[in-house]
Length: 320
Image (cartoon, rainbow, N blue to C red; front, side):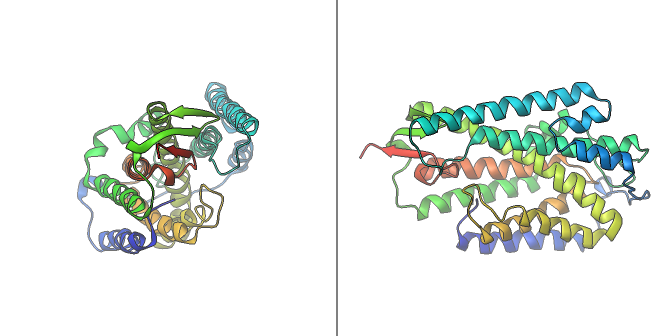
């Protein structure tokens, strides 16, 4: 998922250049990250907790935080159950498999985020000073609401949002399809809806997926993987390996197809978001906000300019 190739060439260069330029400068004193002074040791209890986290909510239950574990398990089950129902209804309507199952995607993001929070809790339970080791200890409530906080007004977040709009416009420019005003009905989420209903459902899907992806992926890659790699391998190697891992995670697009361009784009985006994490003193709020607004504005702009090219694969019928 992302802008066409000609836009990617410019934007990837920008996203790769910004962190490199930033590392050549001294970051502002108030935002300067503290040097990790404590090495991360993966004790047996941490490893066990991470294994249990492969079951949604299981990691927290293993650590004794039963309420949090049940909350994650319940949310995962609710989304997964809705996804199964959407799949059943689509099969009854004899639809193909091109549509992205949005509830199942949200269930996956809940699970991914629970892995990140399990890792933080397990390391802390083993006596690690999270801040001293380069991890963010910000409460989940603040991380989830980061896209709607003061961080949304920062220029680093605005850059990401602008790139999202640019990508959406470019997709609409290339698509030889009518615009949103010409939509008559949309087949989506196991049903058939008119344009007004589809706008509401699509908007809700975009909001949920953008927030889920931003929180879960930033938690896993910037909040967990990057500090572990930097702590063990050094700042620069850990930074680039984490960025490359983020790119590799996007080798398969939402449509299930191999997407080498998307992986390159995600590697550049991962470098930008990783730079922002380091620049903010190992804080996830700004990377989450930047990730959210990129995804949200990209998906929204694509829907407005070329609804038939929407990233979820919803089947759009036009008036002519």
